[in-house]
Length: 583
Image (cartoon, rainbow, N blue to C red; front, side, top):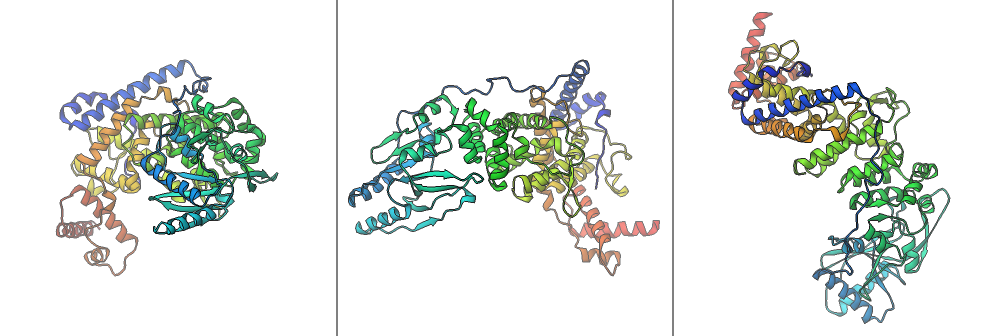
């Protein structure tokens, strides 16, 4: 049910001084922020009326990486040293010739001075489960408890191309796998594996910064491609072998290159960018990589340190629609260069989050907020599923393009669906005047005579009940387009007034959660149960009529938050009597 509809262009500035004198502190701050936002948009409209500007790509070199501080050696923690000493003890005791190398991300992160608890050990002459058996034999000889060993079988669909053994040592899970070499079939990203040398293993890695080893036997870092340390220090994302062949062998590496580049703020090498944007590589991503794997990489990007940089790369490399593929029966037709507009809105959303200190939303809410901002320009687009049901295009992107949780797509669509109401709510909370009943109503005439404060609580409470605990996400997103009710095709992140939007969000959030005490309002239950309402109304059967009365009762409870069941029963009976007399 539509609770409130206010034409924001009719906002009266003449009431601003009165509002500032009479209102609570959060509402005074809200009024000032709204005034500045509207004044800013008026100036922008005047500028855009005199000149139109095409979308501008980020300037060349604007995403370049500075020299990166890289440690000259790896400093082990006390626990890491104990783990490695125990593993070397196994090698020495059984007089094994095995070289133990920590591979990949752990080495990279330690050299960057970052913590990493993901230890993968590559073995040069045996399988992981065979070495784990030796570890347990060694522990038994020393009178220590044997450890459980888990074997993860080869599962190419989950990027597990070789059997991996897992063992918990000093409360840390360690993965053991043998060094390998790879060959690829023409139409598959699933390689054929054979035992390989350390150098072969390094060259078959996706990126040079992930090709480094830490040799436990010699306590040294091994850069067998000769590029890993240099690229790490230069902040460059590159591949051990030529990028074109690397990406055609396994096109998922394109998305991994973008993800790691955005995580560390590194720059993609020019040859990497050229190969990633090649039509043959884009076609290979669509044909050889499962949608589940694409979705997992994108979701990791959105949850990482610099998600905007990742999405900007997707757009600049013309991979946006390869990743976020659209249905064929899209209505209306997709606007030209809308993908660039999507990136602009996500950039503004990210800047807004940073201005709020990043603590305004939890991790999952932040992730879905960024998705909602990214797809904001697509929120009016729909398609028909196989049963002919009309659905938002965001549903297709989450369910089919990315194969993420259907609930994520539903949440983003729901957030998009309440934006107009949140924008109207901002104005309603900002005004000391009762809106015209013809343009702003509560859905029931019996509530029109309530005090303005009670109306605010009812309207706000019913809106929050629609979106539940994602209401801060919807509120924050609404500030991106406020005071409009829809996105602007000329939106530019650089023109977005972050400070004003942050003030509006903070003020409204305080009003809703503190002044109106509406947090968790979606958990509010009717004080009078359905069967009790039937008795009061003298009905023999339930149905829609009972749901309507429960909805009325919830509004009454929002207006009377301290009321108890006895008062609620009396109110329902009194309203029934009044309606009976009218009839």
